[in-house]
Image (cartoon, rainbow, N blue to C red):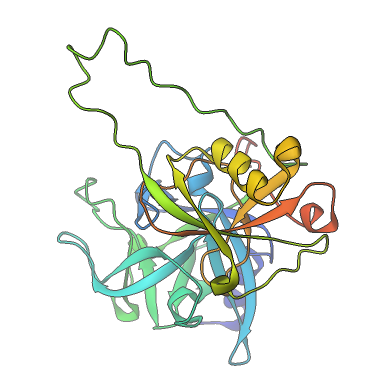
Length: 296
């Protein structure tokens, strides 16, 4: 791979920026699924936070590589050792943590594809990120496949997402109206998810105890990020000023705190969150993708 092409590919992933990745073949966007684990292609979710990924550049073995963590849930684009599902090639790609397993599962290198306007994303295992289902669009999972199996299914268009000037408003949860529908449509009570929240408050500079074993915990019901902010604010003693608390999620011990502005994933896994106070240097350093902006 020519050095110039590799450099051009890397330039499309500025450190700290948000990007979308669009499949050359399908036109679908790389999407962090709402279960908080899967990664797939979605065609109608371009303006979703789930299609936005923040770039984190790191130096690995003397070369610059990237980590991509979801703007929705803060988890990292990761290659799994598990085989891809039936109808898909290679190994499964998931939303993973940057934790005790180290950086290898979440480490990627953008390289030139040999076709103008498209890049390849090469995992540290030397496999390439690929779409699936060329002729069967319902095979929408994303995987990594051997470098020697290159095809246009591995070509990605990088779309830059400009930042918002500040955090988006959090939408209050919609109450469920059960009156009048129980006999017709509501056969069962809605399932309310429950999970453990581990939390810590950052100081004004963004520093906090990196070891989550020393964090406090509470039980949280539901998925509402609005309700989560209020509960975190209450636990850190800022209930009256809950609107000044920014809840950030951290995926793994070495994960970067990501501001949470969409509802929690549909699972019951323990969530590590960092409370950042508005109008502090720590809050000013946070970045939010303007997913509604027009891309040229």
